[in-house]
Image 1 (cartoon, rainbow, N blue to C red):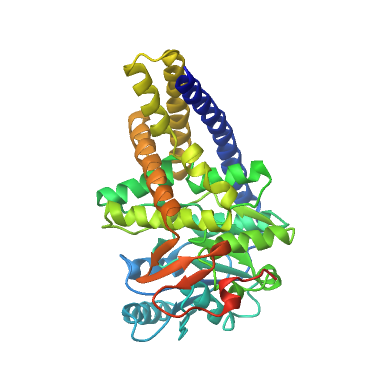
Image 2: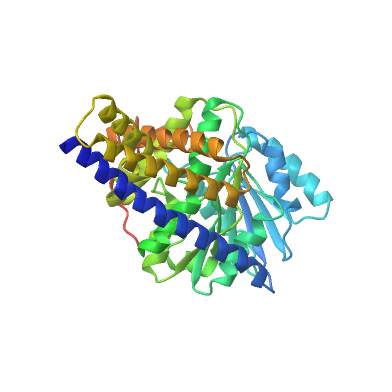
Amino acid sequence: MICSLVVTLWALFALAFTVVAIGATRQLFTRARAATRRVRSWPHIALVRPCEGLDPSLAETLRSSATAKYDGPRTIFFCVPSAADPAYAVLARVRDELVAGGADVRLVVTAIETRANRKAAQLAVVDAHLPDDAPVLVIADSDVMLDDESLPSLLGALVDERHAGAASAPPIDVSAATTGDRWSAALLSSTPHALLALAGLSERSGGVPLLAGALLAVRREALAAVGGFRSLEPYLGEDFELARRLHDAGLAMATSAAPARFTDSGRSVKGVVRRYARWSLVVRRQRPALFCTYVLLLGCTPLVAAAALMLAAFSADRAAIALGSATGLVIARTVLALTLRRCYGIGGGWARALGAMLAGELLVCAGATQAGASAEVEWRGRRFYVGHRGALMPLGVESLAPEALAPEAP
């Protein structure tokens, strides 16, 4: 009886959470779409593509920096740590091609040597090269493909929200080729861990809003006021820390209606689990109060359903109530998955949404379990211990400076 009661209460709590998530997602998406239509003047943007190593479709994603629709002026920066980096030749070739076509594209060799967050370090170097008349910095990861909705939707969300310091686009996977790719795509498109749902929920809760670093626009004045990217270099999750600082400064954060389209492909299930374990570890170290929600709420549907089925199989007292509550949760989560997939422009009916939801939530649990078991991560071929508030300490070397290991916000 006690087991049935626990499962029933867990299912009902998760069901209520899901209903709120559905409403928050729909409301946020509707508002974000309307924001783009209200913009009449588009600011000059500095669009930065930090690169290191070869990503699938790198040349195509870089070209999209110039070909993606945007009605305002843009200056494009490709950056790479070294001319010896495998990405350098691709960047130079695409830069020359785009410049010949009339685009303003610049290539910066950042020469960074940091043992911490190399993306933040590259952005800090590029900051000195940005034009003074570009008030907005747009950062697009090297594996993000921009289309005609990407920049208008992102900048529309930022410009429409007068008090917003930054805006970001929720990422999705668009090049699924392996089982690992498909599971990753399922998590980002069909679970409460989808960044569109998380953004809506964080807005409803009144806590620190979500910023997704894959495709991000930030007002340069606001960025400088919270310390710039140089101060974010010690952190694993520079986007999480930036969101916290902007929130503490009294600034809002907006979310784009159009997603950031990841082109990663060919990943193993093990590699995908490691990736989401790293994302979960960011939450564990930088927002520890939220970490328990990964298993209890964000990825709980397969666990609740399995527990209810076991109770029914063993004819436990009040198992029917637990099973009915779990069924309600599965239906609600499938509705959430359908809502998210329609917002992202992903096809498929109930059956596909159900399968993606279950696979994605299992991946949420697997990543959170691994993050809970160890504070060590491998990131771009380097191993780190992730300390307090997400500070990175390289393993196999002596250490970073003490101020990098326990950084203080400005």
